[in-house]
Length: 143
Image (cartoon, rainbow, N blue to C red; front, side, top):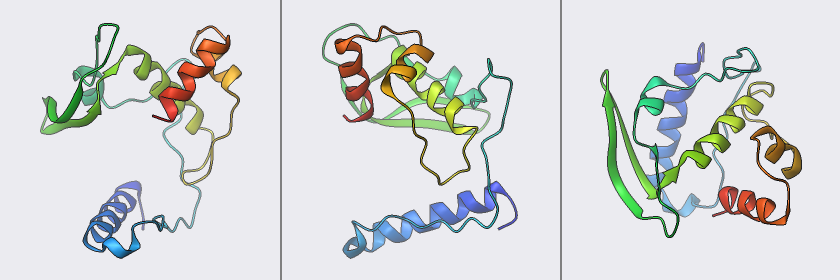
């Protein structure tokens, strides 16, 4: 595997194999990485995000209350890329969490665990650090 796109194809093939073989349901996918591969690194105040994601309605404005459950909803089509989403509606707070996760993953090789405390994560996304904020963050990661 020479570049990241070869790895993406490899992962996609493994996922399709997993779907075909239900008996291996609980075994995680092993991705062989010879060299350490990182996400693109940028200045600390910039996070590399695909334009299609940012210009889509994936992270929309959601009113307080119960979020809708969506199934394969078309969120965007841009330059030949299509964004479809299934799951609970995502809002701007979810975008903040996702972007912070991307920022933290830039420093760690792909395939490794990224460790952090909930307190420092909440501080980095400019949220309160009280009990309700910790419960909110837990609900975001462990739906």
